[in-house]
Amino acid sequence: MKTKKQNYLYSLLNIFLIFFLINHTKAADHQKSFQPDIQIVFISNLNGVIENCNCGHPPLGGLNYISTIIDSLRQQNKELVFIDGGDFSNPYPFAEINEAVLEIYKILQPDIIALGEQEFIEGKEYFNKIISAFGKKILATNLTVTRATLNETLKLKSLNVLSYMDESTLREVNEDMGWRFNNTVFEKLYSGLKDSEINILVYHGTLKKLELFLKKYVKFNLVLLSHDYKEGLISFNSPVIVGGGADGEHLMDIKINKNNKSADIMVDMIPVSKNRKSDPRVEKIIALYHDQVKTK
Image (cartoon, rainbow, N blue to C red; front, top):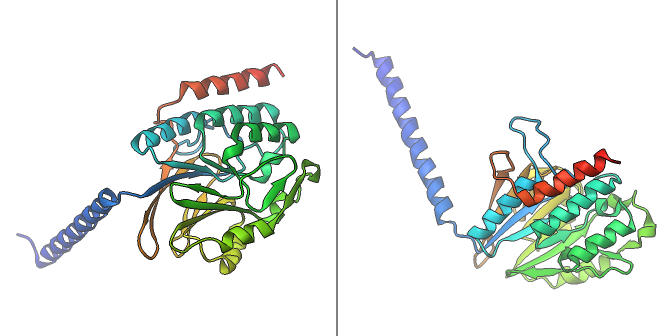
């Protein structure tokens, strides 16, 4: 026979199971019912990491896997917006790996690329190749570069997207590259943002400086943080802040529904694991990189 204590424990267990099932069902129903007006995939701070390092548990990363994930998401949602927050290039000059990154990004075709300081590290020739390949997609609201036409703002799928590069991030980049900050442009475009629209900021700097920045600039629904290695959902307050992580280990999957007063935003992290299919086009570029390094 069961004792009173056993009956009590069984009752508690049943209550817990019922509570778990109800909440799990609600969460699943919410995921199914959340049909986004806008879906964004965000990555930042790739740092020239083109392949899985085969380290960690589980090992994450690899542009050959990222490519197939992006392709799959685009097949599911033709309106998907893929944003790179910058620093996709290697942190120090490494021509072979940066050339490989650039060739792979031609396959990935981000919809928006916000420049980071690492895109300047390799020098003018490499930077000009970035501009040549992605000029119409490069976003640099408060940054101008001599003889380079960069977008000050981009409007995609009812999104207003601005970028802001904190001045401290370019301290070690040679000014001979012809860059200069132009915060007047940012101020002008920011003042034209409407609360009735979905306003997104790609911020290149530290979270600490971003928090100070947002005390002045309050019109954004969503902020995508790059340069800082914070990963995933950082703040669910207004605005929602999402960090892109580093080294291509995760993709940030952001779903947005616009309502009358604000935007409903859901954030998930997609692990870039070796369980994913590998893109043979990217594999060839990675193999060529290894051949170049061996014969160097």
